[in-house]
Length: 233
Image (cartoon, rainbow, N blue to C red; front, side, top):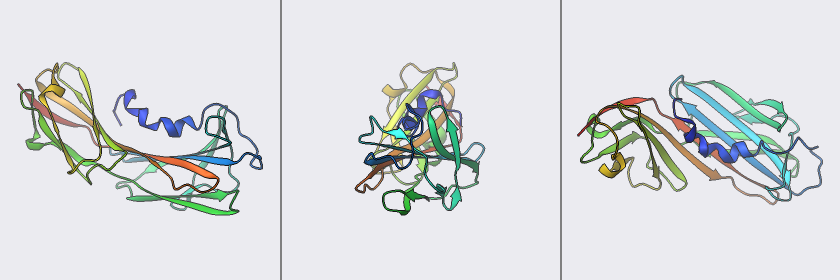
């Protein structure tokens, strides 16, 4: 995972649920539970990470982190509870050659007094490259990925680094009709011809199904392998 720090903005919602306050007792009288899930996979190292955070309060702005009674799991595997000054959250890391297309989080819902499950789709973008393995400063080029076209609330963040280490960040925002996107010459203006490095992340922030007392979202991040491309004048 070699993208610069600016590419981690898509994780703000999930990370924000860790901020602010210490853990509150689960029998708190406040009304809503706010959930933040994160699934992150990097082809470099074949690393998978998943986080789950829970806050409770009358609104997200005043909600406080809480611990969940019993296990929080991903595809049946318990997540590890982590305590910090910011509150408690749940996480799991590991290696996996090919990530699953769907992941199911489950936890003990204090309002429904039962195990609640959320199954989320994990979109991927593999074999990211430019058509013809070439990019033209004059005519641009077409970025292609193996995977579905982008849906609403999905995007691909592209980071180009030219031969002089100049960085250019380009956001491809869904929906797209195809698993490809044409970059214009204007988007490459100011870069230097020569061998360039490409890093891409496919990301989405999708709402979870709402119930009377539960709201939240899942953030997905898929980091493709770093690749090279020849940029011609």
